[in-house]
Amino acid sequence: MSPDDIESVEGFRARARPFVREHLPSRHPDEPRFMSMAEAKTLQASIFDAGFAGIAVPAIYGGAGLTLQHQKVWAEEVEEHEVPDPLFVSIGMLGITLLDEGSELLKRRHIPKILRGEEVWIQLLSEPSGGSDMAAVMTRATCDGETWVLKGSKIWSTGADEADYGMCLARTDWDAPKHKGLSMFAVPLNDPNLTIEPIIGIDGGQPHFFQEWLDDLVLPAENLIGAENSGWSVAHTPVS
Image (cartoon, rainbow, N blue to C red; front, side, top):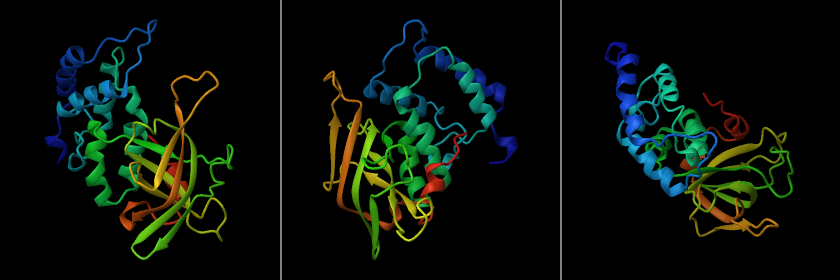
């Protein structure tokens, strides 16, 4: 698409403003409202269907194919309205990481679903033995022909009970310095070789964090995100 074919910023604002006022609830700072994942998905689907999701994401991946200026306008228009906050990590962080680092196959397969809220992604980074050191990864990924076999555990994952995929950091080179021997993988959370358990707080309330066990979980080679042993840089993809 040439610059002359892109919708003007003024035209975009004129189209976005009535949609926002009609479809997005007003936000009251003094009365914060909890939005469930189901509500967030429904709202995100309406935003996507109207052409306002992934504003600066290329259209071939389900986005609007516009610019960061258009994205800024959208942020201004929704400032006083409720947005699908439960999907922020999935869309605003991991979707961007996949756009920047994923293969063409992964981008075409997953980004449209992420943008519409049909797929929810979470991070699988921290480990029970690692403390605050994200690079102290002991989960291993072993190449076996055209597949990778993952074994290990992750912890303090948010929303694992409602998510579909995790971006999982695993060690692929045990001889390299710890930051340089890591790779990132797309892990389906419904895999039978993955167990998810809630971490129950002392109040016994609804769990917010989870622990996962990967027990010889087999992934196709295509589920590698970025290059092998570049997982540290993938995990630190800047979010625009």
